[in-house]
Image 1 (cartoon, rainbow, N blue to C red):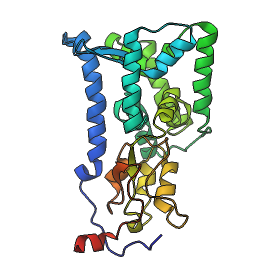
Image 2: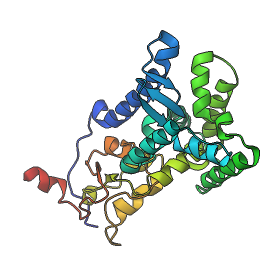
Image 3: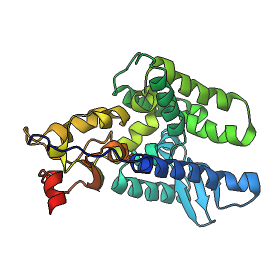
Image 4: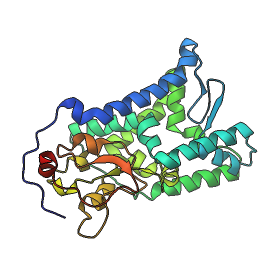
Length: 294
């Protein structure tokens, strides 16, 4: 890798350093609003939940993970469920499966809040299980569904329970959401989404060959400030793209663990990262002073 460019990058303002975070929150709350508009104010744009829904009475969308559990449980899905799952699979196969985790899933708001608080209070990192654990949990949910004939994960899925809690108030649903918050706060920092949740594991598998990717084309300008590592929910995905020039690794982040959240773009004052495709140019771009001069 070339030596970092010698210049002082001005620290950008709040909006510039949080643009993608703000857009993500708008997306997450927007999806919640669509689902809650019907039961709360009687405007039925979307009927159902993130597991299975019908938009404007026409477009069926089905969580393929929920459908897979249903198949393992011995159920025969309706044609609309199959169509809905196919649409969702196609979409996330293009934009990246774990985009669901960072742009759609409401539990991400809970775990991000827990991470923010743990950082502010300087709570120790705690137990960090292997990331492979989420794949074991994924396999166990399918095996249990097959053994019991029940879609097991939907009984305890915090995403589904959060929807119920918003509609019906205090109860077990909010207890489950609080448990996720406290788990990430005191037991395992970013543990739920990064190490436990089978939904994230499943969508990561879907997006393994996705077209949309994060890219570090200006990695030669990196000054090792580590801001991107501090905000990334899956920081291990950054190193190959950011530090891999000497080993011949390209600048595109190809790991399916990446959720395309855009936080690395937000916090990098040297503009090292950007959204691109998996086929983007991987050679280092010229340093920022050279680009600015051009």
